[in-house]
Amino acid sequence: MNIKDIKDIKDNLVTSSSNGFASFFKNMLMILLIVLIMFICSNPNIILHPESFFKDINGNIFYTAGILFILICATYQLGININNETSIRRKRQVINEIKTAEQDLKNAAKKEHEELVRKRIKNSPIIRNELKDLLIKLGATRATVCEMHNGTNNLAGIPFLYMDMTYEEKSPEAEYITDEYHNFNIGKYPFMTNHFDSKSWIGSIQEVEKEDEHLAAKLKLGDSKYGAWVVLRGMKSVIGLLCVTFNDENEHPDKATIMSSLISSSQLISALLDKNY
Image 1 (tube, rainbow, N blue to C red):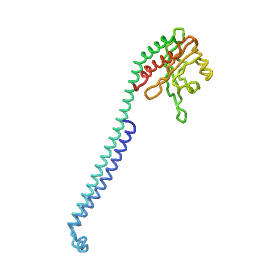
Image 2: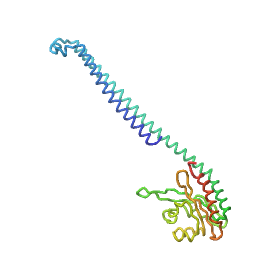
Image 3: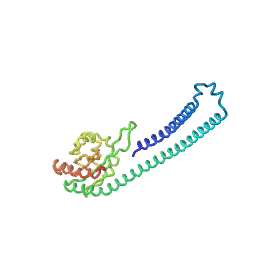
Image 4: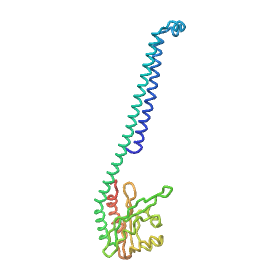
């Protein structure tokens, strides 16, 4: 059940209350009409000989008509009271159903969040171990995972794309650079947007510098000379990047070996970071 379903419940019940009063009023008019027809049928002279009828009528007829009128009014008033009480009960029902539905939505969202937190805690050691294996297998300086997120939007509603380096495994001689890639705005770096659709990239820092001096300068802070990345994709959307870097441009495996290892690791890591798996 979502917010639209809650609004539908409210609209249906309120409409039902309004229709209930209209239906009751129409029924009362029908009853009054039936009584009038019965009265005329039992006294045809009111149509055939109205002068004679009104001349011959006595106090008993007026008394009977008066009693009948009072009964009709009392019944009508009783119906209004019953209808009002029904309307109040229905409004209370609407409020209770909305509160219950809203609470159910909150509980479901809280439960889903807790399950995803447990999944993150459970899967994080597996991801780190996979990065360590990748680091050793390729002899890389670093193996990292950068996850994409939408920090905020512009005034027209288009999201800014950010990345956070959420996992980093490094060789003993290297320094940690995780904090340098917090809220990493992809839009500031042309190289990232130029190559993102290609799903992977491999090359030297000089090649990056030709397209994007800003990104090259940032990569040099981590003493990166050569690197590669592949896009991590979930079942419904892009998750981020799996990257490896080397501090020596000439000492690293061939491109095919690096990309094969990255693609293999990315399949596992993508599944571990996707809530739909």
